[in-house]
Image (cartoon, rainbow, N blue to C red; front, side, top):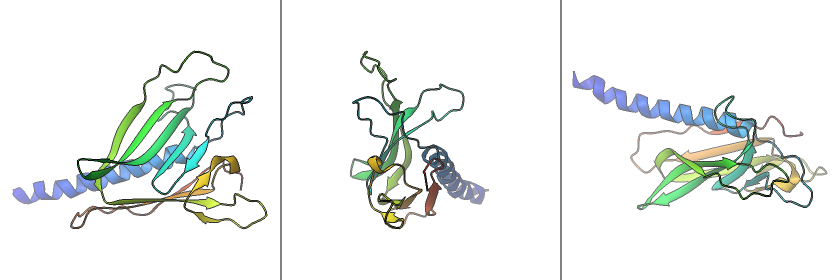
Length: 171
């Protein structure tokens, strides 16, 4: 009965990728711009090809009304790369107390080769929307976020292109 055990691992891996894609679809899809604060600059959405920072509701429903600042990034340790998600509570406006909230981190996918994020939208309303390798939140939210990921040579895992529609993007 060893064949079933061999089968269970790829299924587990595939299920993990599906779970992670669903989580990212939910969180990035709910990315939002914070209420504008007087004189305080909050990075609402900052995207590069290997990491993105955005503001969204908490991962678990009904946990809190407060928004969180999320960071999705490639991290490197022990000569390996991983996909990590961090989140920390967005400080309420006008609060003077220092942020005492620890940053929470989760390793989403271990041992990846490359990660490539892209952002679709029109930072300049006068020009047509297109894909960009980086995005500055000063231009609002991108319409779409795409995450491509590859695994090391010989790794059986596959990451289907993940394309997420940002619901609040003003298209």
